[in-house]
Image (cartoon, rainbow, N blue to C red; front, side, top):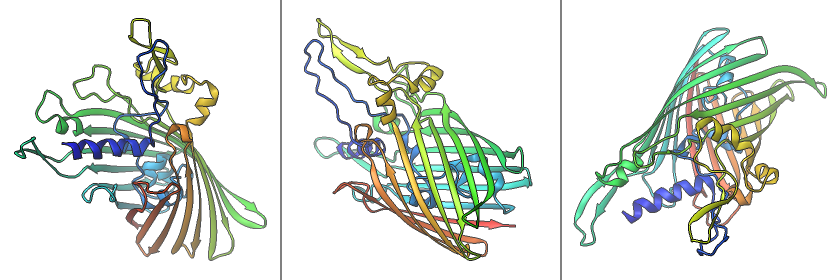
Length: 387
């Protein structure tokens, strides 16, 4: 059981970075707590594809492909092909366990030039664990997992502008598995994604270029509850805004610059203290046990540290993508999160190949801190497109 809990909590902390919390001394007025945002089912925010990962976790306005179902569903209708799909695989925390992974399967179909639909499935497997008691007697075998199934519709409003909407069903059986037959069930939630995308051809330094802008609200939905918490946990509702500029250097070479900003729209943990009787109380910030709309849209102004702390909750992603003859790509990127809000800072690298209807992408993550469990994270994606 210790190994299960260790890997489970490491997984959560690696999504949100490290937690820097003060100890609760029980003294009157002593502040305790952490400003790190901790949503439920954080696997929804783990990048499923190699292309976006290699660009520093960017994708709000990159060139449309099947991965648009995750990054910005409004881009889907701008794909040049009639139909296609992808399969992605990411060994997760392979420096700690060898059987944890994230897999992603998706497909799309263009109904006509103005409409497209898509389906996708994300599966997060935490591996198999054998649980023994203190005497070494076998108790149970666990296989905790989480899954999300999506359906998407994307439509052009003009030749340059499109909108997208997705519906999502989420299932998490982690808590039930860890409870070992106690009265705790699997967690369920439903959510929607909303996207907008704008793309226009321009001239840059005498070269043809494409300028793109995108915004995507993802995982806006009900709290997830495992049966032992009446309030439930906010799922990782996220607002992503980005831009991309692709410069066609000549008929064979192009270079794209991408930049994204993300805001996790869940309540910021308040600062807690102790009253004169030793009871825990909020001394700064807002109660995180709020309604969906209050917690989500109130997240822009609920940080105890005011505007300066709200700005610290923004993450930044940037990347460069070079293409040769639309057949071979080299990518690099950088992801930055404030040190007080998780401290995830790393470089990313990747390659991409396209041949006829098939494509292959891979990415490599290199944290800037030593001995980081996410070091050497590899992602692999295979895609296909048909006219």
